[in-house]
Amino acid sequence: MRIGCVKEIKNNEFRVGMTPENVKSYVNAGHEVYIEKGAGVGSGFADEEYEANGAKLLESAKEVWDISEMMIKVKEPLPEEYKYFHKDLILYTYLHLAADRPLTDALLEAGVKGVAYETLIERNRTIPLLAPMSQIAGRLSVQEGAKYLEKTFGGSGVLLSGVPGTPKAKVVILGGGNVGTNACKIAVGMGADVTITDISLERLAYLDDIFGARIQTLYSTDAAIEKAVAEADLVIGCVLIPGKAAPKIMKRAYLKNMKPGSVIVDVAVDQGGCCETTKVTYHDDPIFTVDGVVHYCVGNMPGAVPRTSTIALTNATLKYGLQIAGKGLETACKDNDVIYSGINTYDGKLTCKNVADSFGVDCTDITTLF
Image (cartoon, rainbow, N blue to C red):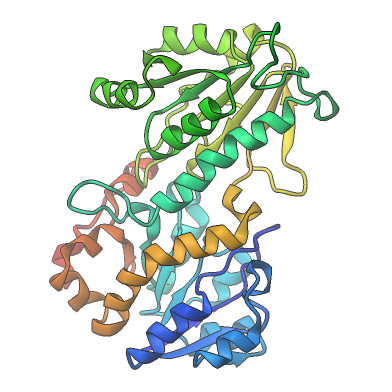
């Protein structure tokens, strides 16, 4: 199969869909790999490394898109890339379609086979291609939140850990999944006073077992969230429903009772955000303020640490990518039915139920299409 990888063009996105080591794996499996020149520079991978591992370098993104049967990316294509779509192209990347109707329509119109990292679910219900970025985003969320609590950034001037004789900062984490657990780990490690909420009592019991008396667990209700965030210095939104728009559990009305200069980091922004006041921001202008509360809503948080993020992501995506490239998407699904869950669009049909539900449209059962 002819496999392509282009430079990401999202604002301040430095990750890349394939490392030179990935290229070698695909080439050794008999595939041709085409890389846009400079695609890996932001993650510290030189063109010469890709060439040494068997890739063919092309001057422009258009050349790579045109020749590729399978495109491996990191982020969802932007509108200026829609013109490169072609029928039967396998697009293997994060898509986050529930928050992006124009991209969904463009993929359907072109007949692209869209395989989304964030909806591929293993038999044990884990989300292996989302997990590494969830780990990074969760850990970064506390780091970024701590920074924007500094007075020079409009924060309240509170140090997360405090010092002897001063109170610790209060951190409230909304959602106890992979992102929330990793955020909790860093917040506890930095010495903050941590509360974490979730709708699963089983998950709360698990977190209680891990962190013990170092955290407070709360069952997630509107009343519990409103009370918790009113006392918080830092709120981290970590709510996820795979493929579906994030529920708006952080209401705008809650902001008026929050401390001036408190900070919200909405990690769920890729899926529309779990805060009613969320809007997408970028690394070069990451924050805005509503009702005295600083909001950090960067849609590609792991892009701030691209070397770590690229290696972690491609460690996870390579396994499934090799299956798809080696057998074709259809046979790969039949041999490993887990891959079905990753397909969001196929031959002009929307095939992810959670995405379809977000738009209020019909979903086609992917298993009936081939």
